[in-house]
Image 1 (tube, rainbow, N blue to C red):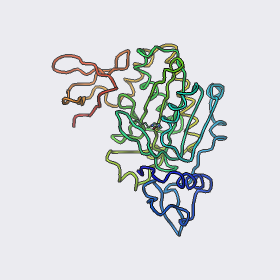
Image 2: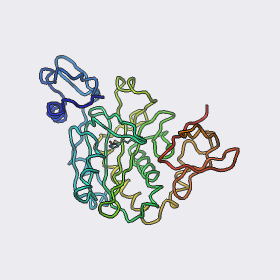
Image 3: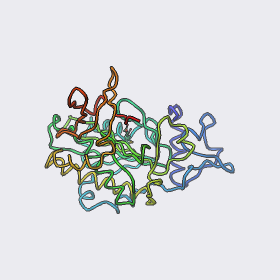
Image 4: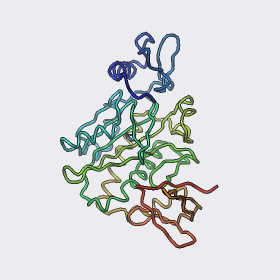
Length: 313
Ligand code: BTN
């Protein structure tokens, strides 16, 4: 993706694209390749490479559950942003972000777990961040990301997704292909406020897919045909419900559900650590959301912060 050098002119281009679904090529900056943003050029126009399905704040609000609607204080939908998580974390430094939802048609500097980036091409995916105040001590937040994963899985299944599973700690997979990921950041400026960032591939353009190093899939391949605003509203509603239950009951209440939807449960896997892999069988998650691996030397627990998991082939 672009490093966003020409962000001011790009900003108005993305705003026009979000509004009209196209832009005359003459108005696109010469020094930027539309393909870097998941766009195509056709008959002198710059277009999204997938069907124009813009995010609509009104449609999102209308499709929220009544609980999420009562919780929502502020909904921002930007044509372009650096990172929706960064936006809420910056705001959390100034004011409470509880009740805030931030989405964007494209992120130029999307953030993934473990310092990685996250690609969100224009108009094709969902980049959503929620600011949620929780009455949970930081030491007990270990399972929050797993709960958010279960919430997203539940939401997309209500919109017709089939064949998805979770990969600890919170990837959404279709077979081996990654369809979504979650990055939770914590602000402790005013109690504990979570910034729950969710990236979901909805209709990932083939051209973008080919440029990514990882095996990626999308919700359209999992059978979802709903509008992006409708999927976004389902995700926000579900996350609010699940995080509310997590706040009341802790991760213990979700442990069995996570194991049941964990695609790698019972499988032989490598946990990749800085000093090499540890091999074992996944036997479950702990009450704190750690992964338990049965190894030749006994059971070992791993924290989501510092490791990644690979299925042995
Ligand atoms: C992962 O590495 O799997 C987590 C990816 C999280 C991406 C989402 S997109 C919305 C929010 N804003 C970001 O910059 N990151 C998260």
